[in-house]
View: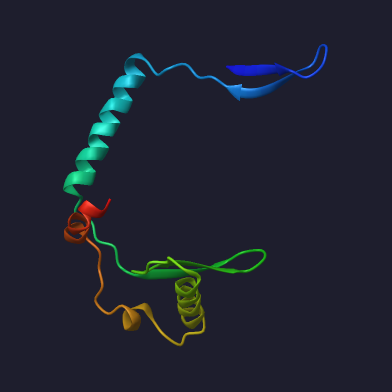
Length: 116
């Protein structure tokens, strides 16, 4: 439901929206969804993620979708990710060579649980 503010003698402008609280079956659905989400965050799932990358042709550039065990907290670390992507595109290296045998699974997820 929009909330209006007067901006002249007869004109009004929408300044915010108010929504009704969720009730009934929809509330039960969201409660069940939250419970399931918390359960999965606590116990983890049996899934493994491996390093991967894919080149994408965009209308304005070449894009790279990169999955790798890297943390980017500064501009210097971002440069290392860009250099890795450039090396992959030019065929100078592979993810197997850079992250030999790496996988991220349920055990790693549970080990990092206290950090979330």
